Amino acid sequence: MGEFEDTLPSFFSESRPTASVINYDADLYSSTICALKSSKSVIDENTILIFDEFLINESWENDEYRALSDFCAIVACTYEVIAVSFFSKQVAVKLIGI
Image 1: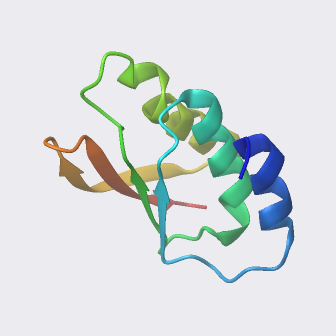
Image 2 (image 1 turned 45 degrees about the vertical axis):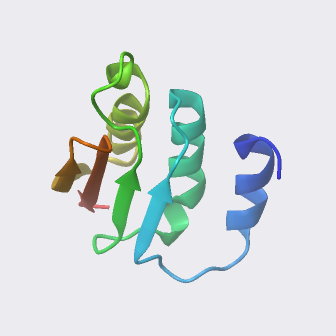
Image 3 (image 1 turned 90 degrees about the horizontal axis):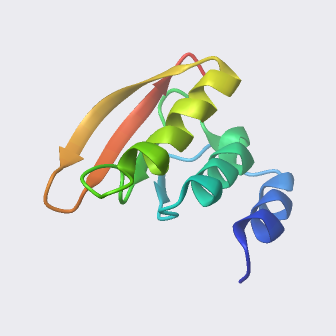
């Protein structure tokens, strides 16, 4: 329990297998970018990343969407949207070139 930046780096500093699916329920830019950076070691081109409030909210362009875009710029990859739920605002993506 605690802030993402206080807990995730140490959690992912231990050796962990590659994830099949990661659900990011972070909502805000700062939390989402921290979660993405921290979990990079367990993400590959087959990992499905799910964002719970990726679109259709007042600040969507500045929160999870922006965090994913910035993360992709940092690690020099792109992403492919594989599923969208306009009802729940969720988006599932796979990273390309990670």
